[in-house]
Length: 410
Ligand code: HMG
Image (cartoon, rainbow, N blue to C red; front, side, top):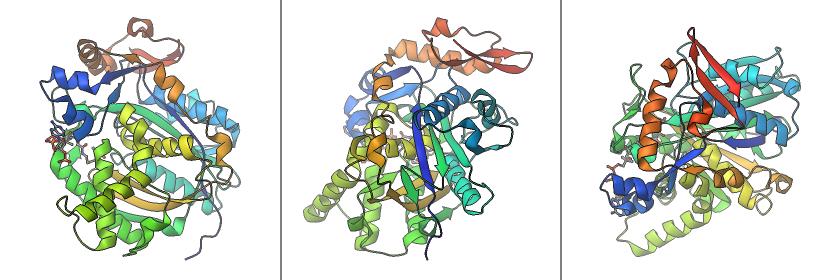
């Protein structure tokens, strides 16, 4: 099928918290071999949000950065969608806080999407449909993925935490990535692999089962997108996946190659294993550096990998095709193909978050544990002073007074 008009991602930016934990240090504190976290899971650091950093503050920082660096006038935004599974209210969407704090026009449709890590892909495809339907009338959409992944101290999920937001402007003149609507395939199945009951701040996971569910969803969504094509990987310059931890991308890529070859790849079969590792090193591994430094940011993880690809190789891969796979536990998934913009090289430097990542503060394990405990109580704390947590120069949550959340620049 032919796509009528181009639509896709026109601007991208990342924002995250000021602190991080080193995973080798966490492993030692948990009496675990550090190689389990760094090699077994592929993670080196995880971003940790303190009590003054929440889904709203990160969404606004990322959104403002995307609008500023790509010179998008806030008045051009006609739809704002925040994909999150860690919102700040059962009723009021993060998006409407962000709408005010970003200074967007009142002529704007604003809502929050939730389906575990799939919320931002749901927002991206919904905003593409809004544009393709003609309802946008030349305006753009702002889709922001913002989350704090938290599993509880000492749980198996603990080393797969993280926090951060990725903002994307979606338009019919996408400078960064055109997504082909006819290439989009979807998958849904009710599974209990990962969830967060209303009474819990931390997610619950059937960890090993969740990996199986993810891989089944990849098979299903890819089949819906491109059928049983056995030659797709050869046509692609990169394969991007939802990245709860870096090793998951390897497992996902193995599943894709197995689908193409029509058989299971075993480590004991040296030739096929070498084909898999070579394909992974070429198509996936280079774009997982930010994920390894930041951790699982749930809805934004896939798009963080896209930022990584564009910041490193935008110019070199301009005009090339890539695949994207988004998975949300529970579960829902989408697989699609996109083409990198031909002028993307011009934006390579501005979307690179390395400088802000380099200024993050390394938290000792006792500091991290104290911060997590303070964050657990933050919703019920009247007054929070960002300076008490070493924070300045950003937008912060400063407490809930009279049942109302307060945000201030400090
Ligand atoms: P675990 O049971 O503690 O770890 O939890 P493990 O024993 O499975 O070990 C992990 C890997 O490290 C294995 O590699 C080990 O062999 C290796 P694999 O066999 O898988 O290739 N290993 C070592 N390697 C080197 N040196 C060593 C060593 N020891 C072991 N000494 C698990 C792991 C991922 C289950 C856990 O962290 C967890 O529950 N995480 C949360 C759930 C999750 O991330 N699921 C991923 C799929 S679901 C998803 O992506 C959705 C999600 O993002 C949520 C949403 O949608 O909102 C989670």
